[in-house]
Length: 424
Image (cartoon, rainbow, N blue to C red):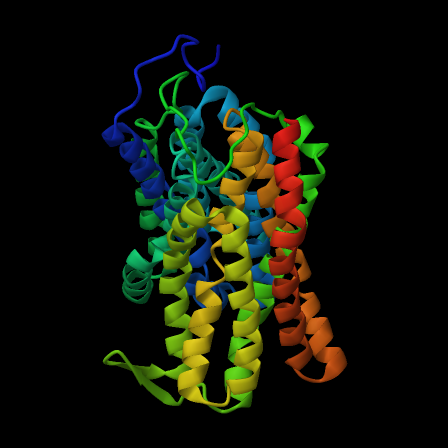
């Protein structure tokens, strides 16, 4: 018996209030760590203006954060599954607070890099625990629950971007790091006290699930021997890399077509084309995660993957063809963003459907390292651009990766998954 599983005796089924409460607590924790990734860009120039370390050297800290936040999740997930989310998330709240407090007083790149690693470890635990808990509490709406939780991370920084920017402007970046770091950490610690994994018999499997689910729990070692895992990993990397490549080229495309500063009016809002496109990113990158997760609960994971990945591929190619029109540039970039972030709801749900909930955090943690792999491949876009003299090839490759992944969802992943479920 462990803290994660609780009593071996069956308990009364948890109420909907209990389940949704656990989901909301996890989402709040995710919102509190969103700034560690999405708010970082606000600090780069102020740090460089004070220390003159160079933006490239400062951005190494961000790379360190992303790698530690993704690649350590399988090991962290094992500890979460073993000891439960409460203690792991509570300790990680301390880590993310320490990381930003260190940033506020960092007087060397080494200290900045160490802080990034500490923050990455803390954020990785909180991300893994929150998503893993959602997957365990909602076997009947796993896609929606994972999507809502992931949306907290994808869109959470939208609530604090303006306050952080204002504090940087009025009090300096050091004060913003210090007070937001402490505040975010304290809130994570408080809500971690309410987090727990469902105990035996507390959450019943759906009587007639729209998505087929395994009847047993696979250990991480068994998952690593499963061919389906590597198919999902390859698809995750392909879609992640393709989307990141396209997103990274939005600025250069807008400037090449000289539309980056052209005003675009849409839904009563007028902004320069590039600013409009980047603003839409924050919104749609969050909305798409629960939306496609919910859709997958209704029509199946692979069917939803096919639709989303195909839309992404077509959207990227269409953006290449019509980027010279400011309005179409904004609309198509929005479509690309909308069909991209759903990988963070579809893949965890599919992974847990196939391999069970007991080790859900660890098993998805292994799959989640695909995000780190994709981030390492994105710089290849710069190599391709330099070799061809334009970004056209990058967009074609990005579109192709998504379309191939869409076909793989139906032609490769679905039959392999169904065969694995029958054998299991």
